Image (cartoon, rainbow, N blue to C red; front, side):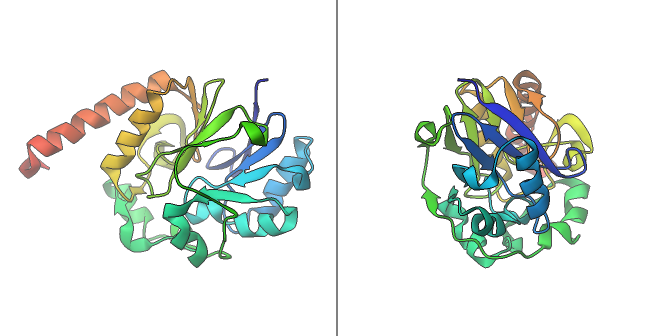
Length: 244
């Protein structure tokens, strides 16, 4: 059966998104910011699902705008949380490691100094520590979790058999979603080159639509065109480092 994808925005209409997957059983992807618990809870209810009936919560990566309310919802719902082990230290600390961020462009340098990416939340202890690809069929969703490192070491995405990719922060809408359907880099990655490689690897798996944490859904064809330009610039940087 096809999986219904319900976007639950927790800031604006698309500036910070979480996603409810409704298949044979419901699964929540990402938990917004520390103050997002009630809005996510109400969004799940509005979609006709009892939050305590969730099968699991998947956190795509260790940034506080994605796992901010995860520990709260873990407690309120009694539902297990799945996250990749490579970001475990971040989850247990309740904040991201500021020393690993590599700002991208002027906006990235400015944004890293603002309060949102530096917030602190309740520490999270995931119930299921992911180490690689993980099938979701037994959890009621026809799809799988794939490891897509680069934005953080433990970044993951969810690829549905029907061709939708919930891609976390491998890319964003322009200016963190303000240009909703315009592919762009987020303000920072831990490893920008690896993030591009992960996005290319994910696109080779054949998704038709990408659903992202900041911005609107984007057709894979548009993302591939943008990515081709990014990869060409990456090759140029390696061949002519003095010019960059």
